[in-house]
Length: 165
Image (cartoon, rainbow, N blue to C red):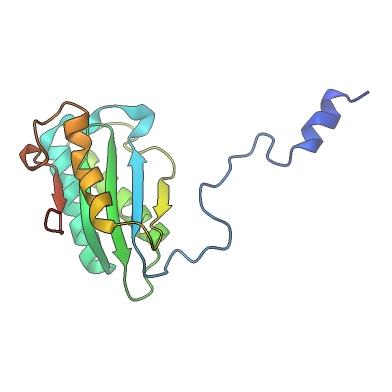
């Protein structure tokens, strides 16, 4: 008969946070990634135009510095989507950490209080058979699906670097 102490030793991840990253995957591989991260406790912090614009400015500045090709992005009230391709050995994980750090500082400078971002982020490594322009369209359609805009071009906090298909 198993005891409670036996059960806890059975599960190696018991009371540990699991990493969302693929073990041993090279996140500096130059291919497209769809990244999503949310605000702390899914608060609608990014409804404020100045916060949303600060996120966009920080993301674009960090992409130029890193270097990373931004393919599309959308800053929603409680989360961010970005489709990107790293260049010259840039590590996607470090890029997102830098963006989150820069935006958290900007948030504080604009009067924000408390934590801005949730821990971590979600990534989808775009497969060869997937269409990058279709993923960009999906990202841009987020505000329309959420009822924040009648059409994608009407939403001020998103951008695609692809022509519509």
